[in-house]
Image (cartoon, rainbow, N blue to C red; front, top):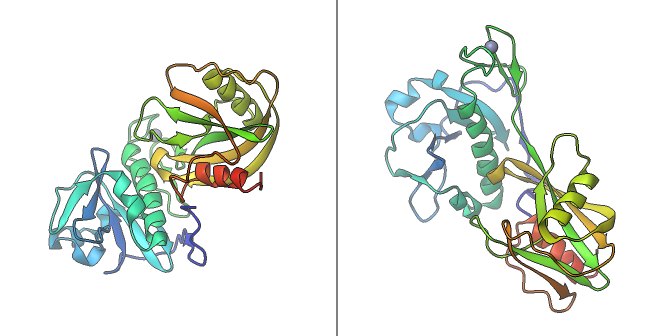
Length: 276
Ligand SMILES: [Zn+2]
């Protein structure tokens, strides 16, 4: 899956010093990310920044390191420079090597959070990096903010030897998937998945079993995959808003894998192979 980058590791090093020439820098503008436009697009490195930007390392905020290389984000919006242009976030998924793709997606998630929290939500003073951990602190009222991670459940609904696949009615992803949704405040994961299944396809489920998780930077989420057994009538009632289609597939008639990086397809493949 996307996050499987062993033996590479992402770590937060509070003692990381000033940016070095090979450190990566995230620039965001209007929901797009600055990437090189060559055959192998990549984030700009500090050494490739225009001299005026290199002269202002205080405008860069350290986010994390991978294999010793730092990832920074830049405050505010910057006009494109050199061979770089603002690109759709989806391009990050295809970066090579794969560990760079995952690190860049994570960096864009965190950079977006910094960008949306430049001012204190309580007293409107400019926020400052907390320094000893990845957080922002308000120098006026002391409020502290940590990066947002939204919990999402993904449910593989099992009925004997069949699995329920769905297709979204909106958004960019229109391929086969599984029922999924955000966890509401006050909900357990088990309650959230039962509610999402009832809302989206009108089915009851029982015996939820945790499978695996996946950080999904593109929606600022932590995806948590469960399998659960159908409890009762298999007749689907589509909610009509979120889903365009929902259909039971026998284990041996499941469509071919559409993505090797997603938890959804890891789950579908596990079911196909009898591992779930
Ligand atoms: Zn404040």
